[in-house]
Image (cartoon, rainbow, N blue to C red; front, side, top):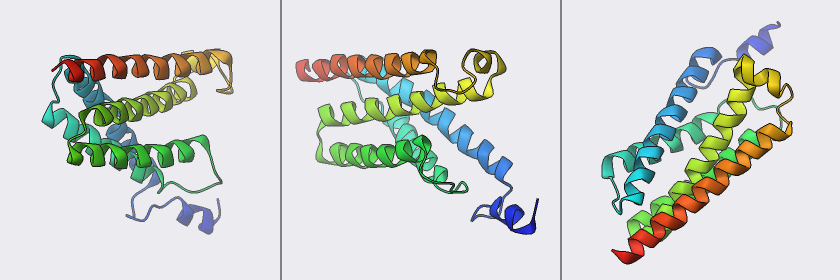
Length: 166
C-alpha cells in the first residue's frame, strides 16, 4: 500500500479507519435501538423525549460520520445518507413547529432508512447471510428491505392516527 493510500485511510479527526468504522456502526446501532423505542412510544400515543433525542442525535451523527469515509464515487450509502439528513432536518423542523404527525412520519422514515442499511450490512458482513446473497443484489435482500420500509410506513400511519385521536 502506498503512502498516499495510507494517508487516505485517515479521517479528518486523525483516527484509524477501523476505529472510525466501529464508532460509526455503534452510533448507527444506538440510533436504531432508540428509534425503535421512540416508535413504540408513538404507538402508545406518546412522544418519549429521551429516546427521541437520542434517536435524532445518533442518527444525525451516523449520517454525518458516513460522509467522512474515503469517497469513491456516489454509492447507495451516500445517497441514503443525503436523504436521511434531509429527512432528519424535516423531523427537527416538525418537532419545533409542533407538528406531531409530520414528526412521526419523518422519524419512521429515517428509522426505515437505518434498517435498510442494517439489512444491507448484515448480508455483507455476516457470513451465514452473505452466503445467501453474495453480491447483495439478490432478491432476498430487496424483499427484506421493501418489507421493512412497508412495515415502518404502516407503523407510521397507525401512530399518526393515534395522535389524531388524542
